[in-house]
Structures are given as C-alpha cells and as structure tokens.
Length: 97
Image 1 (tube, rainbow, N blue to C red):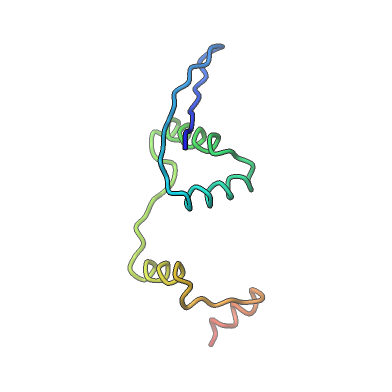
Image 2 (image 1 turned 45 degrees about the vertical axis):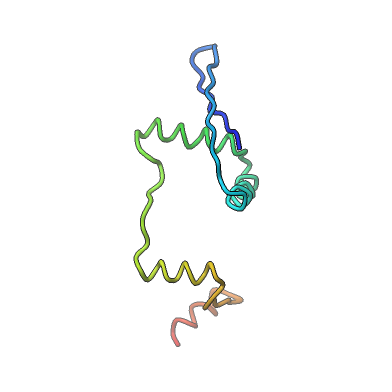
C-alpha cells in the first residue's frame, strides 16, 4: 500500500511519500469503514498526519486493556460467550437476572 502525504505551502505544492505495510485483512476492514464515511486511505493518512502536526502528539488515546477487558475481547474475537438481544430493553433486562 502506497500512501502520499501532501503539504501545501503557498501556491506551490510539495509532496512526500509515506510507505506502509499492513496485513490484507486489516487493510480491507479499515478501508470498508473509510469508504462508509467517505474517506480514501490517502485522505485518512493525511488527516492523521495533520492532527499529529497540529497537536504535537498522537491524536488518539491508546490504552492497554486490563485483564478482564482483555479476556472479554479475546472471547469476542473467538465468538465465545456472546449474547445477542433483539432490543435494548431485552439487554437491560438481562442485567437484572
């Protein structure tokens, strides 16, 4: 995957290229989301870089999940112990059991 970051200075455009390798599954899933919100991969990378430059920090808070959350995420990835509900009311009722 080849992505370009474009920086506009005055009337003349200067470009630099960013190369990134990513596994196919992650790329395809991410591009599905980007397409749904109307962004191309290049636009998403430009947006990320611009926010990093403006904020002088990474624009997303990254956290390591605690052990309970990590176990729940692992089970979810494996489709284990997943409950489905028809309505929010049904979900809330399950908490009362």
